[in-house]
Image 1 (cartoon, rainbow, N blue to C red):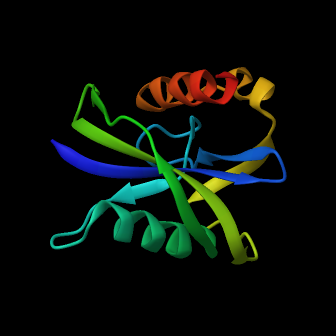
Image 2: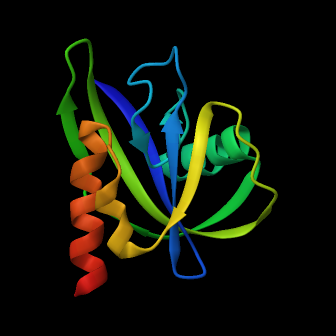
Length: 129
């Protein structure tokens, strides 16, 4: 099972969603950005590093959701979601084809990667609580 982190980055009442680039696994689907945990790295170190590498953004972790285990046709992942706030940086796409800042009510309008759907649902549930 591949351990992967993702970040729900909040800014001005909106949340960042990114679209996977063509040629990548799950190309064209939307996700909360993140990436694989490297050996010796904590979940928290991973998400901070991945967001800086992929999006040129500095984030601050403010919460954590329940991990999601999902079996895709070619791999099994354990997705560890963090709720983060944007600290600094100019968003630059390196591994994605598109991004959107969305309000809570807009999140379900995207075609999400399957594992991320469960994260969207949990995030919506805690946001409405």
